[in-house]
Length: 453
Ligand code: ADP
Ligand code: ADP
Ligand code: MG
Image (cartoon, rainbow, N blue to C red):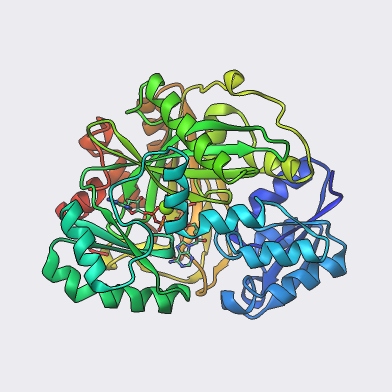
């Protein structure tokens, strides 16, 4: 096992990884930007190294500084968390070149799943269903129009290098496609440094169902069941997630899980990863993409399986074999996660920064809070607006919802606007309670409530 790990991230996920390391007796090195000197991860880690100024591109994306920090402190491995360098194949490659273990899949797997059009082709070849769409990258506007005509409108134009809900554009008809195609390419080039786009049929009433994968470096690969992530803003950002999905039968869970394993095995996947699917009202599922990293919403899977995903990421990277088999994985009860952000729902969800004068976190049986915030903590303006993840577990879905309402009711954050009232509104909506949701649910609810983003 590693003796020391560097965590190349910030916020709650850095804290989460430090906790996993500490329980395993592994020393930790936190890296931080000048804007994060007072962060909880710096306070909790055994050592810390400043890697640059506030903006992410100068610090948490500064490969030379991060790799140097690992070499200087003698860290044997780097955990990249999510976002930042977690899905950057060249970073994993540099780590390998200097003898540092990257805690994640192989460079090859990151490359083959990181490019979404390639990932789609890989899944299709492996026999995993994909939604009708283009065969790979669209070279010209004429190609796009021809493909869209064939599959029928509406369609969605996606940046092959996109992520975090960005680089996705729904197109209703041919006029619109002609108007926006070049714009989509230009935006993709500006945002992701890659202009390539592809096209898929837009499924209006879909559920976002994703499957957690764990593979070791000895060829074993299994799934830990699904997460329901259909409660998303109109910008395709997840807000509330649950495990299991209340809409999958055990038979469907098995089928979709086996498909996810198939997609992962197609690239020899080792470590934790997530295969995302479109799930239709007709109970069909289609591969959407694979995230080759730990996911924000991983705790709901941990809650229902009892398996510590971050510890397993570390064990797998150290060469250990999975100690359980597919048939020994059991799912118990129901878990929900709410993403608490520093966004003001009444002001277009504008992100806020500033000092949190008072923070009081909820607790009690079945309540977990993963967060970097504390009373007196100043939220820097440079990063995403996540303040905390509140995760609950209960024997069934309705009890979990009730427990979440109580937990959010206990949560006090003063000094910044938050989205907590918005989360409570979701949790008390009859459609949510009845599990009558799709990715269209939250945009509809926001419209009804007069909230814009
Ligand atoms: P997940 O499926 O794990 O929720 P997301 O795709 O929502 O993953 O985003 C994962 C992480 O990627 C975020 O928590 C954040 O760190 C980063 N990220 C998401 N959106 C953006 C963005 N607009 N700009 C920069 N980073 C982002
Ligand atoms: P990202 O890398 O940004 O996470 P995804 O490909 O996972 O991109 O898509 C993000 C979200 O966009 C999905 O969760 C879903 O809500 C929506 N979406 C993606 N593809 C489609 C589609 N073909 N039809 C309808 N909605 C889609
Ligand atoms: Mg996605």
